[in-house]
Length: 180
Image 1 (tube, rainbow, N blue to C red):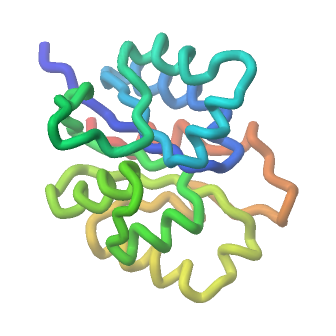
Image 2 (cartoon, one colour):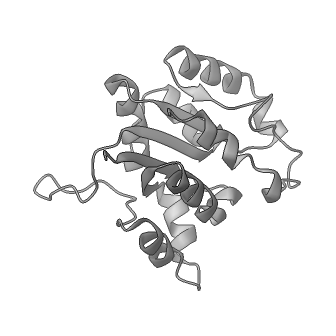
Image 3 (spheres, rainbow, N blue to C red):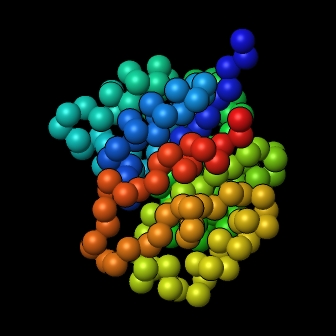
C-alpha cells in the first residue's frame, strides 16, 4: 500500500489551536500528515503550556517544521503529495499570491504551485480583511494557478471582527477537497 503524504501548513489564526481535528480527519482518509507552521503559528504553539508542539509530533510521527533547514541538513520530512494550507491568513494569502517565500511555509506553497501539487487552501480572516480589494484579486489569482481556495459557499465565510466561531471552521470541507 502506497502512503500519500499531506503537508498541513498552518498560519497564526485561531483554528491553528485545533490542528488535531484536520490531522485525525486526514489520517482517517489515508494521509500521512506532516505539520509545517508559519513562524507566528509556531510561536503560538511553542508558548502553549500543554506542549502543543510535542503533541503534534506525537500525533503525526514527524517533527513540526517552521523554518528553513540549512543546505547541509537532510530533510526530515517525506516529500509531499498534496498541500493543505489551513488556516490561511490574509497576510500569507497576499505574500503567496506575490510569490514571496520568506518563510518555510510560504516557500513550500509557492513552490507547490510550480510543482503542480494539489493544493487546498482554507482561509480564516474577518469580513473587514476580506473586504480589502486585494484579497479578491489574490484569491482569483491563486484559483487561476490551480489552487482550490475554499472561500465562500462550501468553504470558509468571513466573520465580523472578533466574532469568529472555531466550532464552525470547516475543516472537513478542506479534507474532502483533497485528491482521493
